Length: 183
Length: 453
Image (cartoon, rainbow over all chains, first blue to last red):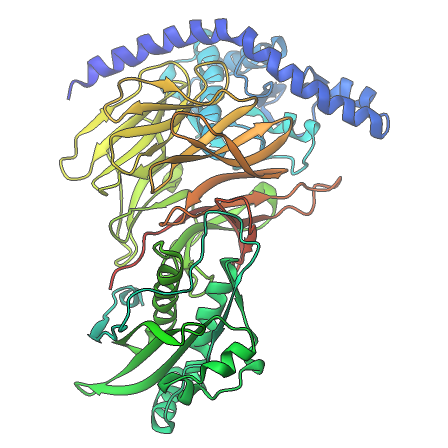
């Protein structure tokens, strides 16, 4: 088998993929905000947790600190994603830069980036989505100087939620990639 | 234990009806608003047989139990109204010889099933011989029947084989009772579910667990031609597609892939597995030939391509892809060429599964925060939604293509409590939605083909 050729092709596809997903983002963002705004409207009708929700979610990306652990002191272990998205937010990039800086200082540490999805998608698609999210984080860590052989990715799809709730806030906490020390 | 799966049926007498047509017929293509009244008389045994069977199986009245298996199967189709045994006027042994049809007309039964169980010794081993007859009450004649001999522990399967015969005879379609369902058994809190592979008879009996729950397992699927299963296991935290022989318990990784493999399914001839490979943030569909060990990439697109399923003739593959921006259903030739999107309705479409009849594709749809199980023609036309709920997915067809089994999850309350996952089934007509009882919570069902002899 011509493995190196396949790998090379795969690499090219990934690059192409990054460009295409970057272009495709705007389209799908529209559908995302549509669905999240309707759920938000429902929430407002019930009581007024909307203010609280606004402090914890930006769009439908979780920005709170509940469930967030530390990779090292002062280095958050996870970043969050919008529904069906793999785009890293400004806050996520900042977190990942901190992780990269710490990993550069601790060059003997290897990590597993675990990608997760919320429960509102089919199991198999979510496995793929989790893998895509973990790779988005991995790619960013690599951009900031962590070599790829120190980072493994592992997708759990929707199999390991941190929050068992069935509401937009719970789902936002579950759409995440978590950087875990592997050694 | 696993040897129980190997079955020995000896057919040695087929009772042929004198006339081969029946007045009683059921049209199962429409919703069953008028189920057919049917009586299943308890199968009778002589006293000696009764005693031997009781010694072997610890069952007092096996004939009665077999009649209950049949009754339960037929009732759950929604096509039959199984009449209360209390109302039967004629004794089982006499009815089996020659029913007094007036007695059955009186209780408004249109069809009658009778039978007989005897104990036999072959080569110093105990066997049971079961004979059954299907009677058309209004036509006042026997329309079908057979007898078979098997090991005593196989008695439930005999009930299923008789049910299949009755169903075939009265609907003109092949049955689905002598089948099994493999699924993922789930236990524990939502955030730490312990999952095991489990297998049971189609009617929920004889549950066996095939893995211990040490590693996460997902999406088991039957080989349509034998007792092999393919599934996803997180063994050693390496999510890979595995192959499991449920008779021997032997399992192996499928292929050697440089990343997570998932979403496996067999080809209709059972010789290939199609699946997804996720690598560097991209999922593509691959096929691996289990005989030649040649593996080949079928899709080539930077989007997520997954959940592939073959058409029954093996010429096409349906799958879902988010190449249009979000999940939609596509069909391509089995060599990966001529990719064509077929779902154009409102919402997100996933998990397409080709019907064993070839004319329909079952799918999961997410629209306005609700999940639907539906079917569409293979060109995407004629979309029909069968059921709507908070969360449900993973349709799998009964081998005759009349019923879809899937799993449904409940919404948790404000405290995150009350989560459950259960198997459900629904007729292609959209009627007869039923909870499929399982010992534990359950998901990812896959329906086997009809078992052989």
